[in-house]
Image 1 (cartoon, rainbow, N blue to C red):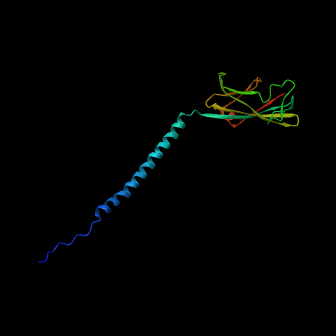
Image 2 (image 1 turned 90 degrees about the vertical axis):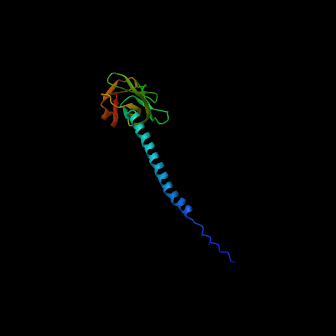
Image 3 (image 1 turned 180 degrees about the horizontal axis):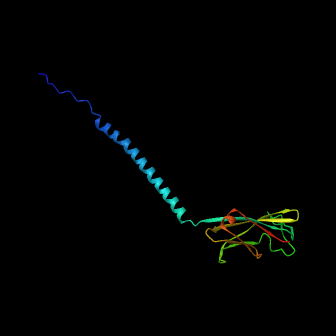
Length: 162
Protein backbone atom coordinates (compact mmCIF):
# COMPACT_ATOMS: atom_id res chain seq x y z
CA UNK A 1 0.00 0.00 0.00
CA UNK A 2 1.32 3.22 -0.92
CA UNK A 3 0.32 6.30 0.76
CA UNK A 4 -0.11 9.22 -1.34
CA UNK A 5 0.40 12.54 0.15
CA UNK A 6 -0.83 15.62 -1.39
CA UNK A 7 1.96 17.61 -2.81
CA UNK A 8 3.29 20.22 -0.46
CA UNK A 9 2.20 23.54 -1.75
CA UNK A 10 5.00 25.92 -2.56
CA UNK A 11 5.48 28.62 0.05
CA UNK A 12 3.48 31.60 -0.84
CA UNK A 13 5.23 34.95 -0.90
CA UNK A 14 1.96 36.78 -1.22
CA UNK A 15 1.90 38.26 2.35
CA UNK A 16 5.50 39.44 2.00
CA UNK A 17 4.80 40.98 -1.40
CA UNK A 18 1.71 42.62 0.00
CA UNK A 19 3.70 44.11 2.93
CA UNK A 20 6.38 45.40 0.58
CA UNK A 21 3.82 46.87 -1.78
CA UNK A 22 2.29 48.80 1.13
CA UNK A 23 5.64 50.02 2.51
CA UNK A 24 6.81 52.30 -0.32
CA UNK A 25 3.58 54.24 -0.80
CA UNK A 26 3.51 54.78 2.95
CA UNK A 27 7.06 56.14 2.89
CA UNK A 28 6.23 58.49 0.02
CA UNK A 29 3.10 59.78 1.78
CA UNK A 30 5.06 60.28 5.01
CA UNK A 31 7.88 62.20 3.31
CA UNK A 32 5.41 64.38 1.40
CA UNK A 33 3.45 65.11 4.56
CA UNK A 34 6.60 66.03 6.49
CA UNK A 35 7.72 68.33 3.66
CA UNK A 36 4.37 70.12 3.51
CA UNK A 37 4.22 70.52 7.30
CA UNK A 38 7.79 71.86 7.35
CA UNK A 39 7.10 74.33 4.55
CA UNK A 40 3.92 75.59 6.22
CA UNK A 41 5.71 75.99 9.55
CA UNK A 42 8.57 77.95 7.94
CA UNK A 43 6.11 80.14 6.04
CA UNK A 44 4.21 80.82 9.26
CA UNK A 45 7.37 81.92 11.06
CA UNK A 46 8.40 84.18 8.18
CA UNK A 47 4.97 85.78 7.91
CA UNK A 48 4.78 86.28 11.66
CA UNK A 49 8.23 87.89 11.74
CA UNK A 50 7.31 90.17 8.85
CA UNK A 51 4.02 91.24 10.43
CA UNK A 52 5.29 91.73 13.97
CA UNK A 53 8.59 93.45 13.13
CA UNK A 54 8.30 97.23 13.17
CA UNK A 55 9.25 98.96 9.94
CA UNK A 56 12.70 100.39 10.63
CA UNK A 57 15.41 101.92 8.50
CA UNK A 58 18.91 103.30 8.96
CA UNK A 59 19.88 106.89 8.30
CA UNK A 60 23.41 107.20 6.96
CA UNK A 61 24.96 110.56 6.31
CA UNK A 62 27.81 113.01 6.43
CA UNK A 63 28.50 116.33 8.07
CA UNK A 64 31.24 118.43 6.53
CA UNK A 65 33.02 120.90 8.79
CA UNK A 66 34.13 123.74 6.52
CA UNK A 67 36.43 125.47 9.00
CA UNK A 68 37.69 124.84 12.49
CA UNK A 69 39.17 121.36 12.22
CA UNK A 70 42.39 119.73 13.26
CA UNK A 71 44.04 116.34 12.93
CA UNK A 72 42.74 113.56 15.18
CA UNK A 73 44.53 110.74 16.97
CA UNK A 74 41.31 108.71 17.33
CA UNK A 75 41.26 105.55 15.18
CA UNK A 76 39.11 105.92 12.02
CA UNK A 77 39.06 109.70 12.47
CA UNK A 78 41.58 111.69 10.42
CA UNK A 79 40.25 114.98 11.76
CA UNK A 80 37.97 116.49 14.39
CA UNK A 81 36.45 119.85 15.24
CA UNK A 82 38.57 122.67 16.68
CA UNK A 83 38.25 126.42 17.45
CA UNK A 84 34.60 126.49 18.46
CA UNK A 85 33.73 123.17 16.89
CA UNK A 86 35.34 120.98 19.56
CA UNK A 87 32.05 119.13 20.09
CA UNK A 88 32.25 117.67 16.58
CA UNK A 89 34.39 114.63 17.34
CA UNK A 90 34.16 110.87 17.76
CA UNK A 91 32.13 111.48 20.94
CA UNK A 92 29.36 113.49 19.21
CA UNK A 93 25.88 112.02 19.24
CA UNK A 94 23.51 112.07 16.28
CA UNK A 95 19.84 112.30 17.21
CA UNK A 96 16.76 111.76 15.08
CA UNK A 97 13.41 113.15 16.27
CA UNK A 98 9.96 113.27 14.75
CA UNK A 99 7.69 116.28 14.09
CA UNK A 100 6.65 116.43 17.76
CA UNK A 101 10.24 116.47 19.00
CA UNK A 102 10.08 112.89 20.26
CA UNK A 103 13.46 111.18 20.09
CA UNK A 104 13.18 108.27 17.65
CA UNK A 105 16.75 106.99 17.49
CA UNK A 106 20.34 107.83 18.33
CA UNK A 107 23.52 107.15 16.43
CA UNK A 108 27.10 108.29 16.33
CA UNK A 109 29.87 109.56 14.12
CA UNK A 110 31.72 106.56 12.70
CA UNK A 111 34.77 108.18 11.14
CA UNK A 112 36.15 111.22 9.37
CA UNK A 113 38.38 112.14 6.44
CA UNK A 114 40.37 115.28 5.88
CA UNK A 115 39.98 116.94 2.49
CA UNK A 116 42.14 120.07 2.18
CA UNK A 117 40.68 122.47 4.78
CA UNK A 118 37.48 120.45 5.19
CA UNK A 119 36.73 117.62 7.58
CA UNK A 120 33.93 115.24 6.57
CA UNK A 121 32.42 113.04 9.26
CA UNK A 122 30.33 109.94 8.57
CA UNK A 123 27.43 108.88 10.77
CA UNK A 124 24.91 106.08 11.11
CA UNK A 125 21.62 106.10 13.00
CA UNK A 126 20.10 102.57 13.06
CA UNK A 127 16.56 101.49 13.95
CA UNK A 128 14.70 104.64 12.90
CA UNK A 129 10.95 103.87 12.80
CA UNK A 130 9.19 104.58 9.52
CA UNK A 131 6.01 106.60 9.26
CA UNK A 132 6.93 109.99 10.74
CA UNK A 133 5.83 113.11 8.85
CA UNK A 134 9.43 114.26 8.88
CA UNK A 135 12.71 113.50 10.60
CA UNK A 136 14.85 116.09 12.40
CA UNK A 137 18.53 115.10 12.25
CA UNK A 138 20.86 116.80 14.74
CA UNK A 139 24.60 116.33 15.28
CA UNK A 140 25.78 117.31 18.78
CA UNK A 141 23.85 120.44 19.81
CA UNK A 142 24.16 122.21 16.45
CA UNK A 143 20.48 122.39 15.57
CA UNK A 144 18.44 120.04 13.47
CA UNK A 145 17.65 119.83 9.78
CA UNK A 146 14.36 118.29 8.63
CA UNK A 147 13.97 115.59 6.00
CA UNK A 148 11.02 113.61 4.75
CA UNK A 149 11.28 109.82 4.91
CA UNK A 150 12.49 109.34 1.33
CA UNK A 151 15.23 111.96 1.78
CA UNK A 152 16.33 110.53 5.13
CA UNK A 153 16.35 107.00 3.73
CA UNK A 154 18.54 108.01 0.77
CA UNK A 155 21.19 109.71 2.92
CA UNK A 156 21.63 112.97 4.81
CA UNK A 157 24.40 115.46 4.01
CA UNK A 158 25.00 118.41 6.32
CA UNK A 159 27.49 121.29 6.28
CA UNK A 160 28.72 123.24 9.29
CA UNK A 161 30.79 126.44 9.27
CA UNK A 162 31.38 129.60 7.23
